[in-house]
Length: 109
Length: 114
Image 1: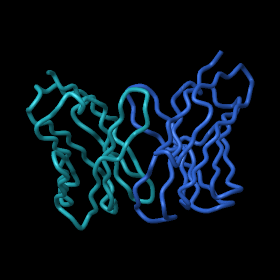
Image 2: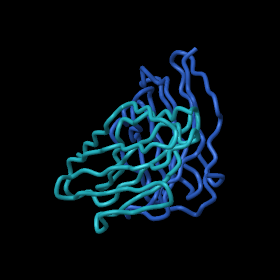
Image 3: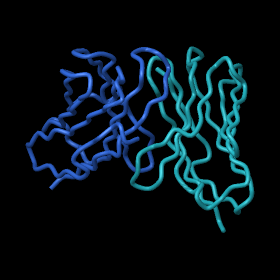
């Protein structure tokens, strides 16, 4: 089955700086890669997703890149703000979603 | 998402007891899912259903059971066979049965042992 690894597990950035989270996956058949943001005690919220026929997707301060050959994808958050502090999960879909272990992002004011 | 309702928000289980977690959606989604979330870990799939009256085991189905008698409802029973049930349980749904569509989550149920 699919195995998703996510790094780093924790990330602390100064407000206004960029944050980058990287994930690798094992199943070359995976074709859909969503990213979720989860605040403490709340539901995961989909923030951006990318499909295997696209290399990059951007939505305001958030972007995702996908390298199918290397089987890795990354989340980029620019101009970070305190409200970006949360746990971020990547996931990969072959016949089901497999999630990474999460990255706790802390934005220092 | 307001369209997926999980209840109760908190649940306590006694030794040897079965408990049932409710998940209802009004999004007209075909597919529904149950995940378990433990501290410091990602979400792990317990069961999923792509259509009414059909469901499949996920990665950690042992000690759990589900039913899908209605499109809107996908209850999860945590049986006494699940020896470590303390966790945060999340229900999700997606629009289509087999396609790679976004999954939307409920607010979760936190289950603890008395």
